Length: 188
Image (cartoon, rainbow, N blue to C red; front, side, top):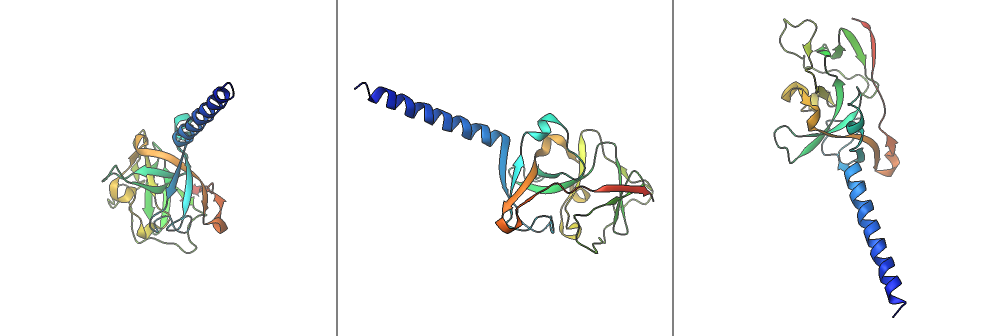
């Protein structure tokens, strides 16, 4: 009988540790299934990525981060977009180019030869672009002509951003860290 008590205690300790690790992991990371082509070529339909839920509790999103966002029309759903405009930035899209604060954004993650037919904002009397309000972010899909993003639903409050995509882990042949960043060039 004395043998069963230590065994039972060991099993309970292992179970408690497993539950604790599961809860910690589910609070810190999230596996995300990519649906659709709005982030192509960076992410493809049916890719699986790991997202950090902890990052934005420590620091705000950075330009170029790929983020998991609550769908503004159906909060039970999420989607993936890229942070382009930070709070206070003036965003303008003209002739297939994104401008932030009158500087052109170089985006190495876009498909070669990409150009969108959409100008943003559509209002021509905002020559410097529209300002991103404090606490919000301007998000775009990498496949600009096939993406529902801030051009459609507006700037996204940080409270709607669930996490930062860190690693594409499936399919295995496309295993990669998701850390490619845009850069700003001189004034336009």
